[in-house]
Image (cartoon, rainbow, N blue to C red):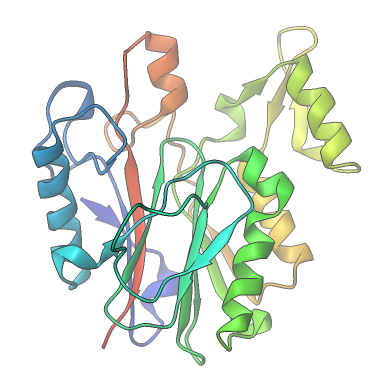
Amino acid sequence: MHIQAPALVSLPQVRHSFFTRQGGVSEGIYATLNGGIGSSDEPSRVQENRRRMTDALGVGPEALVSVYQVHSPDAVTVEGPWTGERPKADAMVTDVPGLALGITTADCGPVLFADPEARVIGAAHAGWRGAVTGVLESTLDAMERLGARREKIVAVLGPTISQKAYEVGPDFIERFAKEAPGQERFLAKAERPGHAMFDLPGFIGARLAAAGIGQFADLGLCTYSDDERFFSYRRTTHRREPDYGRLISAIALTP
């Protein structure tokens, strides 16, 4: 049902899970543990799936907090469950015990952060656009405002589309060169002329290293190539399916 990272398991008073698509109640293309509020899945099934996730994390059903993700560089500080609409952002941080910060992905990079000394955690949705525009750095900045120190922060990248499955076209290559100059090493030659294979996990790791992160780990899990365990937007697109399930990666501080 879920995968845990050794780098985070070892931290005191921190709980986390990179949930797979297994262990839920959804059916069809959403089978089975779809956590996507924004999907077209039956809402009651999504609610039950998310309840199972909070059980696994040891928090209450209302404590799994998520944002309305828009591929932005924005990080928000969470003090409690939302009382109205979810804010539009792509990262969250908190120092409040009992809250689970849940990021939704289906190929983009879910990054979970923790400073065990300061007892501050974070979670970021890092697709290529968010990574290029600074969502990872925004998360670190927001954690520091709560008392964390970036050299003490541990960050782990969960299931993400791998370079061998991430072909990009000329428009992407041109925009990436313009917005991330000097980072062409993350673009490998593709079989199709004018295309490239983009290394999103490598780019995320490089951004965090440049930002002065204390420790970074990549679980090395590809969403596209592992249909049994992970949802994938790109795989769904290639199959011409109408929608796709969403994976949840979450982290919480114990009371």
